[in-house]
Image (cartoon, rainbow, N blue to C red; front, side, top):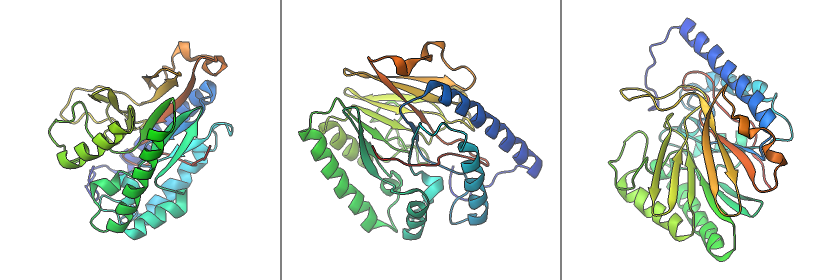
Length: 296
């Protein structure tokens, strides 16, 4: 959804949507606390209000969100990504600074159980008109991280980001709201592939999509809040993605809230694999996610 797009909702409808989304988040947190994942990833759009348009509303959304997320088991850390609602569709030095001051780094890497995770600020690849220096800084950093990925013997190399490079096929038509222009997507995906990245997890679309480039998987996960069914057949409900990691591969399954898989009981007690959870925007109306970033 573009910055500043109108929403024809009454205040009563907004309150109803907020209550529904908070209820969904409440249930999801209960399920996460039960599953006890190694960590949780929120792939951007932490709140709906854009920093440059509704700073007071954004502050309230952030405060309300943090209050609800305080229910999460303190032993379960969060990994936080930035999205277009966090930086603006056209990010500025000020919007990036506000985000970093509030949440910490907007791009970084971390390692867990022999797996390398690279977190990207995709807004800098989407529109860097006003932040060219910052874009170039991230791009040089990415080259450094990919060099490390090539030279080290990691079990897997995973990229986490907000906007997907593509949905199903790298040659598909450019979606001006939800994916990247052909030149950008091919240039970056090729670099990632050559550095042995085989899994990319994204959000942004509020629908589930799956694509491949060679043996690289591009996984787009839907949201806890609003589902994008505009003019399309619904393909998701409010939920999150459960990811299990073995030495050989990575498996993932989208879980609808309220239908936590029975086979997930006691997953962390097994020694053959470990799990983490990915979710995207908790809402496109009032509330959205994350509280913390962490380093391992």
